[in-house]
Amino acid sequence: MENEAMAANMQSQGVAGEDETCMATPDFASEAEQGLTDEGMACAKAQGLASGNVAFVESQVAAGGDESCDEARDLADGCAMCAGAQAPAGEAVTPEEDSSTNAVEDADSDEFCAHEELVSLLAQQAAGYELLGRLFQREVDAGLLRSLCEGRYPAHTGNDHLDEGYRGLVVFLNHRGERTGTELNVDYLHVFIGNTQDTSHVAYPYESVYTSPDRLLMQDARDAVLAAYRSEMITLVNEHNEPEDHMGFELAFCAVLLRRAVEALTAGNTARAIELVEKERAFVRDHLGVWAPEFAADVKRIAQTGFYRALADILLGYLEVDTATMEAVAAELGE
Image 1 (cartoon, rainbow, N blue to C red):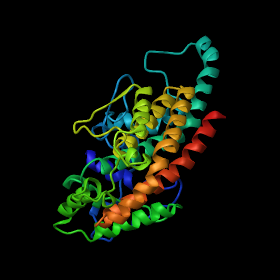
Image 2 (cartoon, helix red, strand yellow):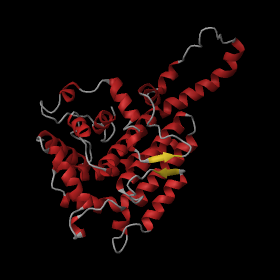
Image 3 (cartoon, one colour):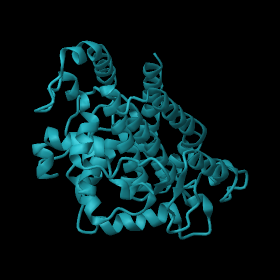
Image 4 (cartoon, helix red, strand yellow):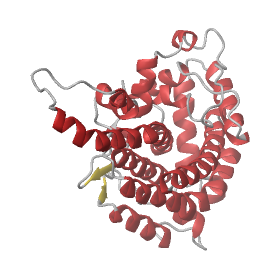
């Protein structure tokens, strides 16, 4: 189920409101021909990639990845409550209660309705960050590859990097063979870990490497990123002792911030939601936006498979779209 949610979310990572076209050939996947059900898509968008892919333990506030599909749908489609739920059986509302509370209830409902689209958008953006974080954290396993092959991808997003990335991804997946999984594993090691002493032929996925004069690990960028995690009382789960400024961790952190913003909006805490959206915008501006372009260029130069070249374009496009999207979200919430 985790990998199916990943692939489901991949199709929606374009500019909101654009028409989506399945670019897969008929033998790409049977599910691609049928499409996702509305229920499954709502669950996928709101639930995202499941908590196992977000490499954080959150000290106080859950990231939202452990919710059931029903709870996730409530999160994204909660405006059903605005239709006017009846009082439960046996709990009649007296005229006095009705007249004194209707105005407040209507105001709360109107505010929730006003934020419904933002809740869905934020959950969708978080899911995209989780997927990208997973793809950069470790190799693509068989289940994830199969789910990606069953996906549908937008043909025209309005962003050149995303369009190029999705085209490259679909071409690669449509020409997969028996050795594709092995080829991807080998290329992951080749691109991000390296088997050469020439560091110019490796795209090390750490911010410090791209922002320090001597391209070293564990530099100022790592300390700044760690401080950002701690500002939200988040502790990194790091089984392989990777530096905290790994691309996968930074992307996952953005997802956590946006999921917390969803929770805040759902709870009616607009001020907290604004704070979290602004934190995410600042993190993208001060960290991912600083080193992702050069990193993505290296990935495209070094990668031997179209998959990782496409992933580099998708990363750049996603950050560009997210920057504009979160600016609009912050403005709307601040009105």
